[in-house]
Amino acid sequence: MATLVPAISSRIWRLNLLRSPKLFSQVKAMKPLPSPRRLGLTPPLNSSKTHCCASDCSSRQAQLQNPSSSESPEVDITMLGIETSCDDTAAAVVRSNGEILSQVVSSQAELLAQYGGVAPKMAQEAHAAVIDQVVQDALDKAGVREKDLSAVAVTIGPGLSLCLHVGVQKARKIAGSFNLPLVGVHHMEAHALVARLVEKKLQFPFMALLISGGHNLVVLARDLGHYIQLGTTIDDAIGEAYDKTAKWLGLDLRRSGGPAIEELALEGDAKAIKFTVPMKQHKDCNFSFAGLKNQVRLAIEAQNVTPEIPISAANSKERSARANIAASFQRVAVLHLEEKCQRAIEWALKIDPSIKYLVASGGVASNKYVRSRLKQVVEKNGLQLVCPPPSLCTDNGVMIAWTGIEHFRVGRFDPPPPVNEPDDVKIDLRPRWPLGEEYVEGRSIARSVKTARVHPSLTSIIQESLQKQPKHTT
Ligand code: KG4
Ligand code: ZN
Image (cartoon, rainbow, N blue to C red; front, side):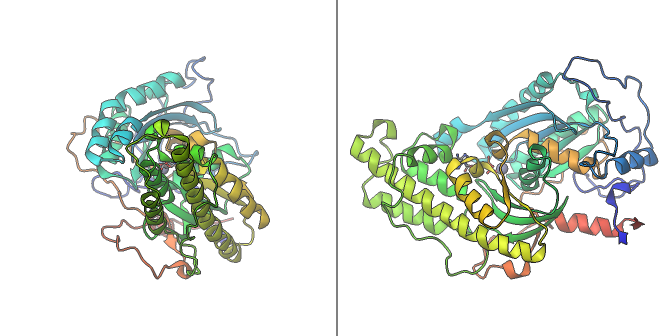
């Protein structure tokens, strides 16, 4: 049977990051992949620099094609991951055996609490103020130096351009100075793939429900870099609805709105207010949270809740009114997820009946109520739910490093950037970058108007590259 074997490509895939895209036939002076080491206890085994030509690389990659196979000898990769797409500055060092050597997150929660949302310029300044320290801490905690790394992975989209820029510039500086390859990572793919780090049995194909502050996606992950988008939001993501509800209820936003609502909802009556479940009449897998947000705002106004009085200062009657709104909002928001998830599972199983898992990830998936309700839907359909731990659901550097490893070992990375690259060099950032191609049946009639300047999807770029690769027979 003729199959495409991307891992044996002798070419370096220039998917991103480069100033003037053209294909290289080999990597010059690529660093040898470091040998397995224990955390900071033994010196690097590869102390002499060897130059790795393209065929050396490809034979290593061939060994790594099937990372889960116990027969293929695993080449150890140590990846630094950098994430600055929204309001968290994060870095981590992860090994290809799944060992997390370090994880550092500097959150802008104080700013968020002060301004009630992410202001791009301020967020950029906050990233720029801490990025050097965050990366240094990640390296120190891991007990590795830059020269010990195999490559650097960084989020290049989707996200806020100004913020992405800070992380990418830092990644390019390190990669240029230490002659390291670069892997440009899709933030939402990283939310999905980090589940493969925690659940070793999780093989493609699987489903992923990605629920965060800026995104609300349900996809079928057919393979690394190959996603079918079954549904997306036509307006707001669920995390945005949690955050606004928390703000309007006068909750403490220093840990972001989601956890504050989750906690307060435990005290409330979830059936106290009859919010309507969104998009019931749409027989698709798309989401909408703008209308629910509006229903919540009206309910808050009707009950004369004064957000200026923080919840900590509210009397018991006022507190219980707010708790009822929090619980009722959460119940209906999650019901909407459940309904769309049920349909998405039916669609996905029609496309590929071999699916066994559904991954729920992104900040909102760290919510216990969300997890328990999704578990019921998923298990009712004979699938298993995989949720990364909360620290890997919210934005983090581990997911970026891990996704970097997944692509790096099949040969998808860029060669090191030039040393001393000027700061004002134009770099490839993808603020609006779909993960997959839309499933035809999934097209929403209630389409979002935000379609301008969308980058071709990750899946279409990779599929196009694959078609240009030589075919191998197995
Ligand atoms: O994935 P993430 O860290 O950043 C984005 O990519 O957006 O997600 C952040 C979102 C925020 O809206 C936050 O309120 C929400 O995830 N979130 C939660 C919880 N923890 C974080 N929502 C509900 N319950 C939680 N426990
Ligand atoms: Zn995220």
